[in-house]
Length: 481
Image 1 (cartoon, rainbow, N blue to C red):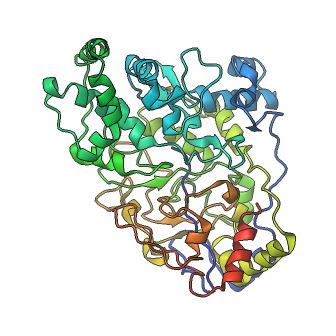
Image 2 (tube, rainbow, N blue to C red):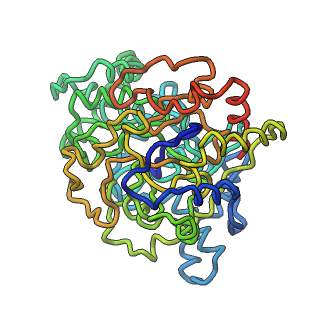
């Protein structure tokens, strides 16, 4: 649910600048070209394990328990601060709305063949310390079982290792939420009269088939669900059920019913990696207006984003002061992309030259190859559904009663950081392109996707102007960071 940005690269002529950010002149580009846009400052990781072969090492052998209490008693200890932040990353739900615990537990115990251990069928990874078999990224809180940062931003690398900060592009967020919200509606449809979208019905059909084949389970399951009827059931329209079913793994709209806030605009954005977020000092040195986080570039800083996560999730933000959120922000800021696999050095060198010569540097001259300003959807040519994010009527005023005064809506796109691309297989802001080869049209024009909010047109820079060898060199360079 955190930090979503756009990929833009490889054009002899960069798009015109958007209306936010500093001026882009030849002297600035020459200076950027002379520097390494992927360079990272030394980072204190607190001695924590953020890349490992197994989940137990990632949660520090279970040693994160009590980390925030230890930090509170020793507020000058940076290592404890980061350890507390890591505990928050995995286990703090900020009081956000959750799924009834009884339903989650029943799905894990009685429908394990369909949902997989720890919901692994939906791309989540088991928490080795959970007595109830929950995955990392789902915790039992005051309002049921809720998501934490780890559900979206901790995943498997291509070599099988697990990494904190990785975009979990295997996470089937839409189908999992259909199991949580539509499966109960369908199971009780004879009582509630609920209408189910056919695509949502197809997604949960294995669960319904299992339920229909086991009379004993029906009695247990329906008895538990009947108890939930006394609670207020959030609205979930048939159209929105269909949207959830359409989202590919690694993508989502997190401002849509039945979630606490619905901005009334169906948007789709790709889960982003959290590696190499620019520090405040880097933002200033690069001449950026602010950190421009989020795919729409509206969030001014990592600290603001952490607070917004709570607010947008319907959490208890009033109980969280900036100092309370600081450990999590500091921990996320410490995350760096794992070392990329070795790539042929001469190929990478040619790609590095081409990154400048072909114009990529014009849009990616900021920290870790990020952009310094925003761009319109017309300039990039990509799906423009996200323009209405948090502002369905496009009047410049954010919806839904959330204070966005420091993080205004932009109706624009941000160029993303380009580190860790070797670990990713979704590109563009909506994740509709599944490889760098496809992004650069290595095998010819992309096969069009026409699904609204998921179209894959635009960003064709380099498709027609670079040779096959140049594309190969440029891709090798991008994969080397």
